[in-house]
Amino acid sequence: MEQAFYSSEGWEDWGLVFKPVIPEGMALVFDDDLRFEDENGLRTSAIVNRWACELPTNGCPAANSWPSYVGAVRQWSEFGEEHGVALFDRRERLKALLSAYAVYRSQGPVDGRQRFRVTTWNQHMTMLSTFYGWAIENGYTTSLPFTYRQATAVFSGQRREVRRNSARRRQPKPHVTVKYLEDEFADLFHKGLARLRPDGSVERGYRGREMARNAAVGRFVFSSGPRKQEFSYLLACEVPKLPSRRSDVPVLVPLPEGITKGSKFRNTWIDYDALAELHNYLEFERAAAVQGSTWMPPRRWGEPLVVTEATARGGRVNGSWMSWEALGPAERRRLVAPGGGSMLLSVWGPGRPFTDWNTVFERASDRIRERYEPRFPHVTPHRGRHTFAMQTMAKLVRGYYERDARVVGEGDDDAGLALYLKTTEPLLVLRDLLGHASVLTTELYLNRLDTTRIFAELYRRVGEDPGLLDRSAVDEVTAEFEDDDNGEDR
Image (cartoon, rainbow, N blue to C red; front, top):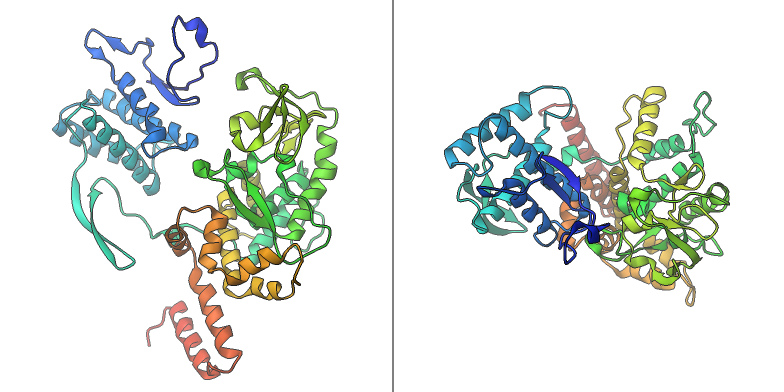
């Protein structure tokens, strides 16, 4: 099978009466002869495509995930073809194939991407399970390659019976694998993006490009916690204005529904200094890059969307007024600004849109590790989101914003936000900032990070300040944890 992305462009020339009901950008599979039927009826490729087209309403609305789901089924099908096992074969043959597939993915060739980590393997098993469940429900097969067993799940004191796929493998506890940057490392990373040494001096012997952009947007990610898609496709005109005076109360940053996960509008925030650095980039380096730019989106992206008027909420695009919030990533990268160049916040070269932030973060972390700090971890944009969550939770728990709220006088523009920060449960605030569906999601998310440190520090501070916590008790507890760290058993 071959995998490609669907586009309805030019469908009128396909000899069809109506436009196909296929989601734009959907990942689809094709056989070498491009046929979906033969003398035996529908081919498996056609059935896989039917399942793919229903993904947006069957628990997978995110377009970025469609290729992964379809790719998991395609790779499984190709492995079966090599061994003479069909996608909808008998159960005993499918189970035997699954065992061989598990060995291949854990001990197979080391070249390319043949070997899966435990997390990747479990993701593929979940995707295959979703596909076969759909196929059974729609009458395409009665056979499953998986064996399920009953298990009891307990959360927040509630027990429920669940089915567990035996093909899934045990993996490390989430809090061991999901990391964030401590303040010292976060500062080191920000300096690395700006081509600065740990002491703040300019780094010599490195010819990086777009340093102002990288530093400003990187700091934005760590200060606001947006997902990669959310900040990569944010428009320059959607960046909030810089307040006329400096304030310790953060500035709200609206994230439009067209680029957020689940298409849910939300507000996050950014501190004044990070926003000021972002505006410096907008007013100088970015303005110079887009001025007089003749950039136009390549033909494969679709028709250019030329903007002649632009505000923070919308603009005139190809002669018609359009709201930015409704535009998804594909449309946003085709927007051409009134003065030339891309409308996206991040640009490179002569005003072209830039979205490859994984590479920027990886190169910066690799350079820091090689030149200054061997312990420095690999950093991805999502690690910036984790760091934001931990830093924000720490500030909320310690009463950081409550202290700021007290200094805001009545009638100030910041008073409403200050009152919200002062009176609202920290988990609820963080839930809104991260865009989670419920506070339980935020609680589970934080459990994957080291929240113990935050509450331990809060307990010590609150107890010591009014003299409620005896210093000797603190020292005793500290010694207990030092024993744990030293591996001693007393």
